[in-house]
Length: 422
Image (cartoon, rainbow, N blue to C red; front, side):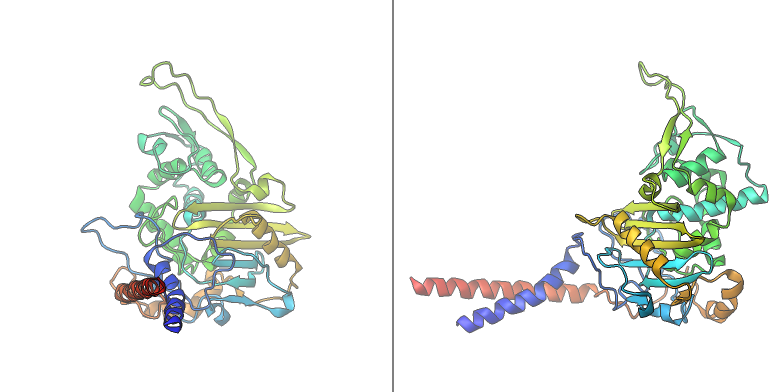
């Protein structure tokens, strides 16, 4: 009897934590997430809330095709850590499921983990929105000094805000700066309206990503709020950020520690209200704010589904390193900023010849993937997804049911044993 009870308890311990992890999505901090088995090769991690529930009757976005070979080199097909032993030990205690370290100028990838894994970008997708806005400015279809009047949709936007208000007037420069410096969703909303609305803006963002060969990327919201189909990867974020850093205005704005954002007049619908003066907003990039040596700038992001994300670049001795962190957490004595610093330190220590892959440019990378792109299925059409490591619903139910049965038998045997002792 004793041996049988022990056997059942061991089986429960082995099986049931796995079933519980799939059945109840509890966000537990993990210092070194294991991705070697490619759990996010096709789709992003399971959502922990209802932000991606599609309205009844609305189409469900299909996963993006997985390029084969992967963009940037064959080694980037790996989903675990991809590194050159000659560059030394990769940083430890990194909580990000996916990350990447690369030379911003040469495009040489120094090290990465799950580089093409699909993750939600959160507000780092605002770099892609900024690129679309900057393209419109360069084409002359948008004026940097044009004045925009705030709308109720702007000042009531969900999430981080720059503080737009009723009767407030803001230049396009104000809005782009607020978008980049403090990740203002109100600024994202106003810029989206200037670009022709949500549908037109998303189409432009996704076209831009595709033109850069960021083929893991699909923007479902302009601001980075979670929505069905939202996706990018560490590799793609590095591509997008690298492209943005070619723009002098972006380099100027991403490097700002602070910016005086305009205020707005008192609200007639609020008794006793007073004028709301402008204020000095500060960057959400703590490495820049705290004076981390050589920090050129970076974009932060966070949602419950995306967890913490970051993309940014630092310069030392004429060398510029870009890092990407995705689906990570700050844990006790190991903040996300500490992790970023260790990634930069590793990048700068690595020999300049270190290369496990390459951040391509459209001119160098397009030909290698023209055949793959032509043969890939239309992402707007339904496609069957195979090769993922996410268990299907029935396997989860069977596993949970088996655990429940084992627990019940174990409790019954323990009770009988206790009863027999009396």
